[in-house]
Image 1: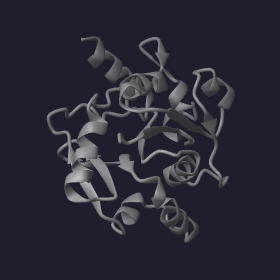
Image 2: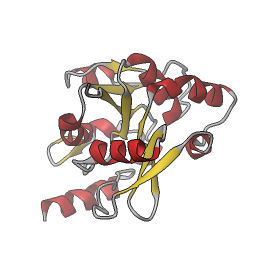
Image 3: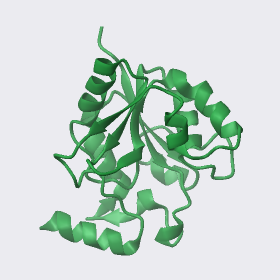
Image 4: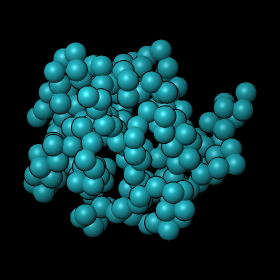
Length: 196
């Protein structure tokens, strides 16, 4: 029996450093940034969902289910993950941000292998120097634990990881895979780097 793996792309933030522009819809090389993330993960998962708290009709035009956080108030990525875990019937859920256009094409394969080899509940990606807290593969059955954590006033995702058997999956062979875009300047630098 093969495992079902779905994905959620987190596009629910306020994007303060992007001047309030919705990061997933900011153009990078002639297409919205979220489309780069979709292109990278689509071959790796069964279904893709988008978590967005604004511009939902524009995201829906991409052809994927779109949902907002169950809890209003921009509570951060945990809120989007909790809602996504309640929307899927998959064995595992891949979580990625909308502003990482160079995600590894073997992201799911390597993270799942690490989870299975170590009997873990979730895996978080690392570029070899830093963990990438919103690039993870986890069991949707962890939803209640994450919701209790968020409802308790906690927001730091790595504190939640510490409560579970979490493994780090290194992608030091792809150090640029997790470059994300938080400012217009970073967007320009990334576009120039990709174009080279």
